[in-house]
Length: 447
Ligand code: UGA
Image: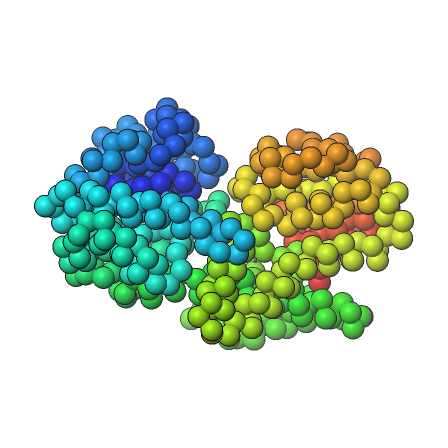
């Protein structure tokens, strides 16, 4: 078993740390944020992720897992590999690499004073070329040593928020990006307990793989949203049935060995909706598109993916305005603030964009989410006419328009509340209620 350090106890670092420890590796997580490290030490997670606190509790009982602040940076020399999982936010469309940069300087200083071979493995999402150029150059300049005297790798994550533990424990594949053979060996040892296909490539291919994966899924979402927007403009097209027919093409939905039609998960990305959000898709599509422009490569599709997605909240407003002639006199209940269910993350959430568009244009605006209200208030700032509520069922009676914007499972209970919904508009931007009897109320979808 390996002795591993993880730098950064954000969503990716913490999930990776506890999951690696659960397989028997000795893991120490480092972070500059002493408050978060203090909380984690008491078993309290500063981020919400299904199953994370339980796994943290069992890891902490286990001597294989501990937490330290970066003040203990010299201890980093004790490890076989340092996994870097610090943030790489996008600022004005550009990747902010300041955290990666400071880790590179720190590692360079440490490597300079050590005889030990240490592999540094980047897990943060970074653009192709970042590890083998930006990061490597700083470490080499600071340490006076070259790759080969220390190790360099790139091991992207494919964790969906809300599903992160399961995605880490049962991955579709694991990518080993490496610049030296020893780091490849270390990556193989770290992930020996995982039984899935492992892709071994140089670090920039590993970085590219991660971007293509996310950007392609975002492309599917924007593509279908564009087709559905065109169909709505043509009018009188049953787009739901159109897409059912498309999904039945056996290249999307093959027939398995038992003769059954299989609808793979990718079909979900081929259904129209209010657009994508979150901390990954918007940032990653923007970043790879900006890189393409910078190096003079065309990125027409990526530009269109972004444009369609940016406009989708306005499209939602157009659908609402068309269905309701006097929206300024309507009382609106917005269901869901998180960018998707099972998370309290509201970054780039379509619900918040829609709330901003609705603010000042309707008679009353109430917003509900089971866990994301605090984050929504922080993100939205002051919107005087938005009232937040931790209850939603008792708000239906006093609402004229109910918008489902995050497909939290509990909102499917609306299907059994037909009497309460009489005469109201239900705008189901996620097609959560598909198949319900809508004879007593006006049911809007993006289809
Ligand atoms: C995404 C990827 O799915 C992960 O593989 C990747 O590791 C992660 O980004 C990352 O780069 O760290 P995540 O952002 O958690 O994960 O969420 P998804 O479930 O993929 O959803 C992204 C957005 O697409 C959300 O706004 C969601 O509502 C939207 N979406 C998703 C749809 O509009 N339709 C769908 O069928 C699925």
